[in-house]
Length: 204
Image (tube, rainbow, N blue to C red; front, side, top):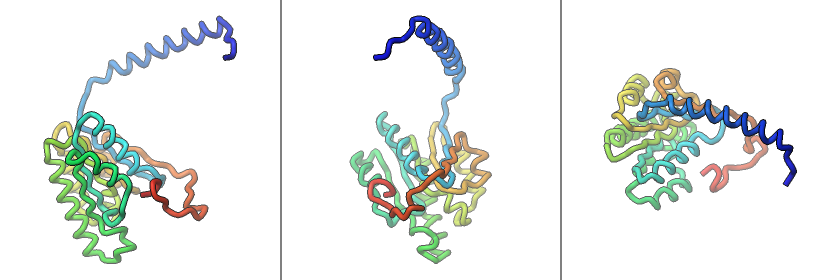
Protein backbone atom coordinates (compact mmCIF):
# COMPACT_ATOMS: atom_id res chain seq x y z
CA UNK A 1 0.00 0.00 0.00
CA UNK A 2 1.29 3.46 -0.92
CA UNK A 3 2.26 5.65 2.02
CA UNK A 4 -0.02 8.68 2.41
CA UNK A 5 1.18 11.97 3.78
CA UNK A 6 -0.68 12.68 7.08
CA UNK A 7 -1.52 16.19 5.84
CA UNK A 8 -3.09 14.78 2.68
CA UNK A 9 -5.03 12.30 4.76
CA UNK A 10 -6.34 15.06 7.02
CA UNK A 11 -7.35 17.24 4.06
CA UNK A 12 -9.17 14.30 2.53
CA UNK A 13 -10.98 13.56 5.80
CA UNK A 14 -12.09 17.20 6.15
CA UNK A 15 -13.25 17.30 2.53
CA UNK A 16 -15.28 14.09 2.89
CA UNK A 17 -16.81 15.32 6.17
CA UNK A 18 -18.10 18.42 4.38
CA UNK A 19 -19.37 16.29 1.51
CA UNK A 20 -21.18 13.97 3.93
CA UNK A 21 -22.86 16.92 5.64
CA UNK A 22 -24.16 18.18 2.30
CA UNK A 23 -25.36 14.74 1.26
CA UNK A 24 -27.05 14.07 4.61
CA UNK A 25 -28.87 17.40 4.43
CA UNK A 26 -30.06 16.67 0.89
CA UNK A 27 -31.33 13.20 1.82
CA UNK A 28 -33.10 14.58 4.91
CA UNK A 29 -34.91 17.09 2.71
CA UNK A 30 -36.58 14.35 0.66
CA UNK A 31 -39.80 13.45 2.44
CA UNK A 32 -42.20 12.35 -0.32
CA UNK A 33 -42.90 8.66 -0.92
CA UNK A 34 -45.07 7.82 -3.93
CA UNK A 35 -45.55 5.44 -6.82
CA UNK A 36 -43.38 6.51 -9.72
CA UNK A 37 -43.98 6.59 -13.45
CA UNK A 38 -40.61 5.76 -14.99
CA UNK A 39 -39.82 6.00 -18.71
CA UNK A 40 -36.76 4.33 -20.24
CA UNK A 41 -36.32 5.58 -23.79
CA UNK A 42 -33.66 6.57 -26.32
CA UNK A 43 -31.71 4.79 -29.09
CA UNK A 44 -29.26 3.00 -26.80
CA UNK A 45 -29.39 -0.57 -25.52
CA UNK A 46 -30.58 -1.29 -21.98
CA UNK A 47 -34.10 0.09 -21.64
CA UNK A 48 -35.80 -3.22 -20.95
CA UNK A 49 -32.76 -4.54 -19.09
CA UNK A 50 -32.96 -1.61 -16.66
CA UNK A 51 -36.70 -2.17 -16.16
CA UNK A 52 -36.14 -5.81 -15.26
CA UNK A 53 -33.38 -4.78 -12.88
CA UNK A 54 -36.00 -2.78 -10.98
CA UNK A 55 -38.34 -5.76 -11.10
CA UNK A 56 -35.67 -7.94 -9.53
CA UNK A 57 -35.07 -5.33 -6.84
CA UNK A 58 -38.79 -5.23 -6.04
CA UNK A 59 -38.94 -9.01 -5.85
CA UNK A 60 -36.03 -8.90 -3.42
CA UNK A 61 -38.35 -7.15 -0.97
CA UNK A 62 -41.07 -9.77 -1.33
CA UNK A 63 -43.25 -7.65 -3.62
CA UNK A 64 -45.23 -8.79 -6.68
CA UNK A 65 -44.43 -7.63 -10.21
CA UNK A 66 -46.48 -7.52 -13.41
CA UNK A 67 -45.03 -7.50 -16.93
CA UNK A 68 -46.76 -6.81 -20.23
CA UNK A 69 -44.69 -7.07 -23.41
CA UNK A 70 -46.28 -5.10 -26.24
CA UNK A 71 -43.96 -6.18 -29.06
CA UNK A 72 -41.74 -9.10 -28.07
CA UNK A 73 -44.38 -11.77 -27.55
CA UNK A 74 -42.94 -14.32 -29.97
CA UNK A 75 -39.41 -14.14 -28.59
CA UNK A 76 -38.09 -16.76 -26.20
CA UNK A 77 -36.18 -14.71 -23.62
CA UNK A 78 -33.88 -15.56 -20.76
CA UNK A 79 -35.54 -13.02 -18.48
CA UNK A 80 -38.93 -14.70 -18.82
CA UNK A 81 -37.38 -18.03 -17.87
CA UNK A 82 -35.54 -16.47 -14.92
CA UNK A 83 -38.60 -14.66 -13.55
CA UNK A 84 -40.64 -17.88 -13.81
CA UNK A 85 -38.64 -19.11 -10.81
CA UNK A 86 -40.54 -16.58 -8.67
CA UNK A 87 -43.85 -18.34 -9.33
CA UNK A 88 -47.00 -16.29 -8.92
CA UNK A 89 -45.03 -13.33 -7.57
CA UNK A 90 -44.45 -12.42 -11.24
CA UNK A 91 -47.43 -12.07 -13.60
CA UNK A 92 -46.09 -12.15 -17.16
CA UNK A 93 -48.06 -11.42 -20.35
CA UNK A 94 -46.13 -11.59 -23.64
CA UNK A 95 -48.77 -10.06 -25.89
CA UNK A 96 -46.80 -8.79 -28.88
CA UNK A 97 -46.95 -10.09 -32.43
CA UNK A 98 -43.43 -8.99 -33.29
CA UNK A 99 -42.21 -5.72 -34.77
CA UNK A 100 -44.46 -3.97 -37.27
CA UNK A 101 -42.09 -4.70 -40.16
CA UNK A 102 -42.47 -8.41 -39.36
CA UNK A 103 -46.26 -8.59 -39.12
CA UNK A 104 -46.95 -6.12 -41.94
CA UNK A 105 -50.57 -6.14 -40.79
CA UNK A 106 -51.88 -2.93 -39.24
CA UNK A 107 -55.16 -4.35 -37.96
CA UNK A 108 -53.37 -7.23 -36.32
CA UNK A 109 -50.83 -4.91 -34.71
CA UNK A 110 -53.56 -2.64 -33.35
CA UNK A 111 -55.56 -5.59 -32.02
CA UNK A 112 -52.48 -7.00 -30.26
CA UNK A 113 -51.66 -3.62 -28.71
CA UNK A 114 -55.22 -3.15 -27.49
CA UNK A 115 -55.24 -6.61 -25.92
CA UNK A 116 -51.91 -5.90 -24.24
CA UNK A 117 -53.17 -2.57 -22.92
CA UNK A 118 -56.27 -4.27 -21.48
CA UNK A 119 -53.95 -6.64 -19.58
CA UNK A 120 -51.87 -3.68 -18.42
CA UNK A 121 -54.96 -2.01 -16.96
CA UNK A 122 -55.81 -5.22 -15.10
CA UNK A 123 -52.34 -5.41 -13.57
CA UNK A 124 -52.38 -1.73 -12.65
CA UNK A 125 -55.68 -2.25 -10.85
CA UNK A 126 -54.42 -5.27 -8.88
CA UNK A 127 -53.53 -4.03 -5.36
CA UNK A 128 -51.19 -6.97 -4.78
CA UNK A 129 -48.81 -5.78 -7.50
CA UNK A 130 -46.21 -3.13 -6.62
CA UNK A 131 -44.48 -2.68 -9.98
CA UNK A 132 -45.77 -2.99 -13.54
CA UNK A 133 -43.35 -3.12 -16.48
CA UNK A 134 -44.90 -2.06 -19.79
CA UNK A 135 -42.23 -3.25 -22.16
CA UNK A 136 -42.13 -1.48 -25.55
CA UNK A 137 -45.33 0.45 -24.87
CA UNK A 138 -43.54 3.43 -26.44
CA UNK A 139 -43.40 1.55 -29.75
CA UNK A 140 -47.15 0.91 -29.69
CA UNK A 141 -47.73 4.61 -28.99
CA UNK A 142 -45.26 5.70 -31.66
CA UNK A 143 -47.22 3.84 -34.35
CA UNK A 144 -50.58 5.06 -32.98
CA UNK A 145 -51.77 1.55 -32.14
CA UNK A 146 -53.28 2.99 -28.95
CA UNK A 147 -54.99 6.25 -28.05
CA UNK A 148 -52.18 8.34 -26.53
CA UNK A 149 -54.48 10.55 -24.45
CA UNK A 150 -56.23 7.56 -22.86
CA UNK A 151 -52.95 5.80 -22.09
CA UNK A 152 -51.40 8.91 -20.54
CA UNK A 153 -54.55 9.58 -18.50
CA UNK A 154 -54.58 6.01 -17.16
CA UNK A 155 -50.90 6.12 -16.26
CA UNK A 156 -51.26 9.50 -14.60
CA UNK A 157 -54.34 8.35 -12.69
CA UNK A 158 -52.88 5.03 -11.57
CA UNK A 159 -53.59 3.90 -8.04
CA UNK A 160 -51.54 5.40 -5.24
CA UNK A 161 -48.25 3.66 -4.52
CA UNK A 162 -48.01 1.79 -7.84
CA UNK A 163 -44.72 2.03 -9.72
CA UNK A 164 -44.86 1.72 -13.52
CA UNK A 165 -41.95 1.44 -15.94
CA UNK A 166 -42.52 2.14 -19.64
CA UNK A 167 -39.83 1.17 -22.12
CA UNK A 168 -39.13 1.74 -25.81
CA UNK A 169 -37.61 4.29 -28.14
CA UNK A 170 -39.22 7.59 -29.07
CA UNK A 171 -41.30 8.21 -25.96
CA UNK A 172 -44.11 10.64 -26.73
CA UNK A 173 -43.71 14.14 -25.25
CA UNK A 174 -47.07 13.83 -23.48
CA UNK A 175 -45.82 10.73 -21.66
CA UNK A 176 -42.50 12.33 -20.80
CA UNK A 177 -44.37 15.31 -19.34
CA UNK A 178 -46.35 13.24 -16.80
CA UNK A 179 -43.47 10.89 -15.90
CA UNK A 180 -41.56 11.22 -12.64
CA UNK A 181 -38.31 9.83 -14.03
CA UNK A 182 -37.19 9.75 -17.66
CA UNK A 183 -33.91 8.18 -18.72
CA UNK A 184 -32.64 8.63 -22.26
CA UNK A 185 -30.40 5.71 -23.18
CA UNK A 186 -27.69 7.10 -25.45
CA UNK A 187 -25.96 5.16 -28.20
CA UNK A 188 -22.20 5.65 -28.28
CA UNK A 189 -21.23 2.32 -29.83
CA UNK A 190 -23.17 -0.84 -30.70
CA UNK A 191 -21.83 -4.25 -31.66
CA UNK A 192 -24.56 -4.68 -34.31
CA UNK A 193 -22.69 -2.13 -36.44
CA UNK A 194 -19.73 -4.52 -36.51
CA UNK A 195 -21.89 -7.39 -37.75
CA UNK A 196 -22.43 -9.09 -34.39
CA UNK A 197 -25.80 -10.81 -34.26
CA UNK A 198 -28.28 -10.84 -31.36
CA UNK A 199 -26.95 -13.31 -28.80
CA UNK A 200 -28.53 -15.45 -26.10
CA UNK A 201 -28.15 -13.86 -22.68
CA UNK A 202 -27.33 -10.42 -24.11
CA UNK A 203 -30.22 -9.44 -26.40
CA UNK A 204 -32.73 -12.12 -25.37
